[in-house]
Image 1 (tube, helix red, strand yellow):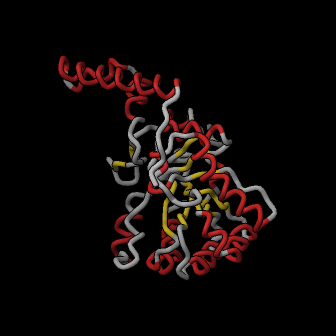
Image 2 (spheres, rainbow, N blue to C red):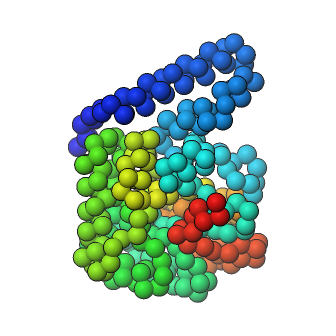
Length: 280
């Protein structure tokens, strides 16, 4: 059921600010072409770009940091990251886990072999139905992050209480299973977000984690071949890459050992998401 949107004063002001920003962009482009955009100043362009509510990337150069539809400087204001330390050949591995289909144990075996920490973003039902795997993740030093309780379109939720309930239900399930507080790392389902969401997550103490490298690996009946996977994941890797993979992917489970080996041969090492922002 789609949440009913309520607009408080701060959200109303944010919306009006966006309208003004985009009006400025429109008239400047009409008057002076694209070359007029720098006149807006870096922060103005940044705020305008951040109004998008579907996370997206473009890759201008192989091996270089991609461009997000909201840049790192803007996201940092909301304790949000899509890329890590771009000065070092490091990779932050993340897996989205909406359900279990028999691939995760093999993925964990490979991560253990390479001594590679990862963050598994799980939904509430994953914790309740796959307790042994979640306990193994924790025992082997991985981070278990919050992917919401019911995997909704979070950009449709502006009500603070409804947003909080989606995250707190997962926190409760994690605590009941492990006896520990859940690490405060959050990934919006499908990368759908709003500026309001980013502010709400920050208020709850969360770091929001998008990604800078991913590929279409989630279609269970149309899995990529080894060649297709490597064609996407090898040329586009870059310093500080936050890699999104799905733990439901049989292809990922099959290629992960070889993939991590290839990245290691390229000079990369693996770091935990808990170090995102540490180089700042």
